Length: 171
Image 1 (cartoon, rainbow, N blue to C red):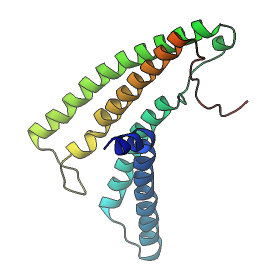
Image 2: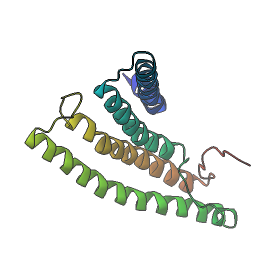
Image 3: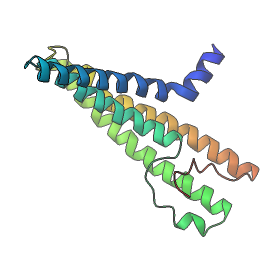
Image 4: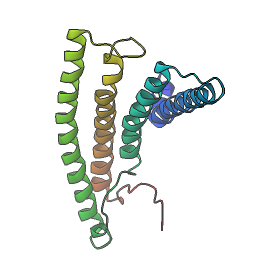
């Protein structure tokens, strides 16, 4: 069980991103072929692509938080010491956690309202809840990764290690 949790912690977002990306590309490819070769397209194809993209965005946000790959202005980080850098990262994660908590609450409210009224999608005719849930699921993953980041940063600060800055795209 511990090995499964370790694997999920390391790769859950990657696997989910792969599933939704393959679903998006395959459906889009099929729909383009149908439209160009058969002069026919389905209403469900557009919805599958749209909702796959929404899940991709929210799961990708959690992956970016985990790897510290989200957009930030880090010019200031080059001019401060390691303790101040750790404090700034911790402060940023706390602010982001507060925003994620508020967004999670309100996005969950939307899902509950949709469930109460039984709204369905236009093409697939399945409950809208499955697609609206992408936002609270995404914010839930973001909050989980932020808490992990905070724990890692506080431990690094206590032990005098340099804070994790993520992988740099350009240097």
